[in-house]
Length: 129
Image (cartoon, rainbow, N blue to C red; front, top):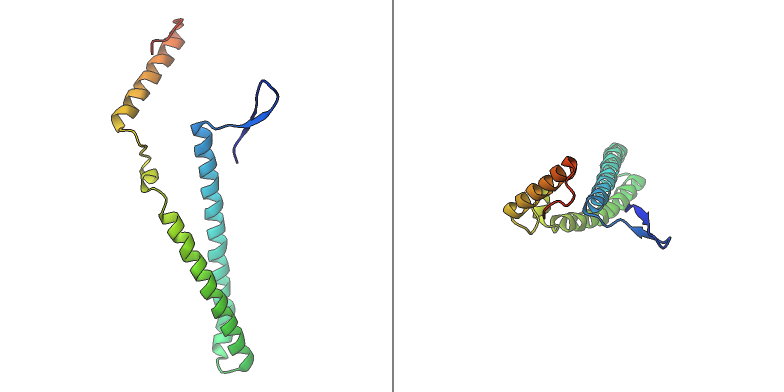
């Protein structure tokens, strides 16, 4: 969730700084990981439960249970496939932390920021930009 900041007028606004947005994205990814872990644990549990129904194949109740589980799993597998496609559609550049700017621009901005911090630490009035 985005942090809220109170403005001079007393109204709360979302913190839309880049670090805040990155933190928000990370929080959402962690939530997604937790949900996927829960799904995997549920599937492992279901495997164990289905073993007894599989052992009784041919039994009317067992066959009905197996059909119901099969139908639900087919629907869920389809939904999971959509989620995979959605995740795959995210720009792959994010994984490599590349922005739409070149590495050189990034390096230059970093150098400038370091120089400005150094000047402020030395007590110079106006850092050169």
